[in-house]
Length: 146
Image (cartoon, rainbow, N blue to C red; front, side, top):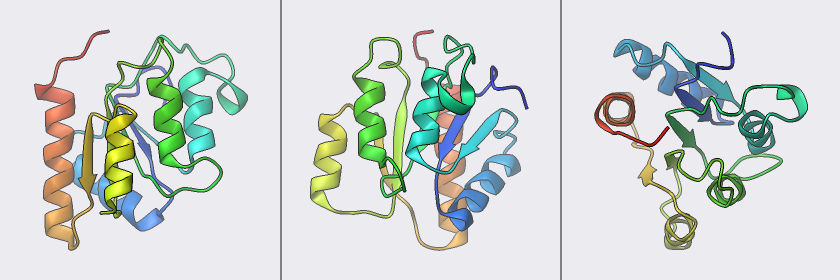
């Protein structure tokens, strides 16, 4: 898949959660232009066109980033901090999708500018429904500046 047409950037290190997310989005025809990365360092390289993604056209931004908090290398809060702190990327919607219900994570995410904080539901049906609703909202309903 070309890296220029990404609509959803999924940053998730848990293989099972990534598979369930992708499956739920595909079921609702929302995963045609999805990029899955497994850690925060890869996400920053992708967004800013460095490292493995050197030369990527960074003006081509995802419509939404689904971001986990607890990840190797660079955690989701740091990814959020960097993206929202850069004028070129601060308008990219970021949905924190995590199993953490910790108040400090919720507060810090919102203080850093997260657009939505979603605790991953337990159980395939609830998880699938939530992911589909998120995908539909951020790709079809929501409007963001280009």
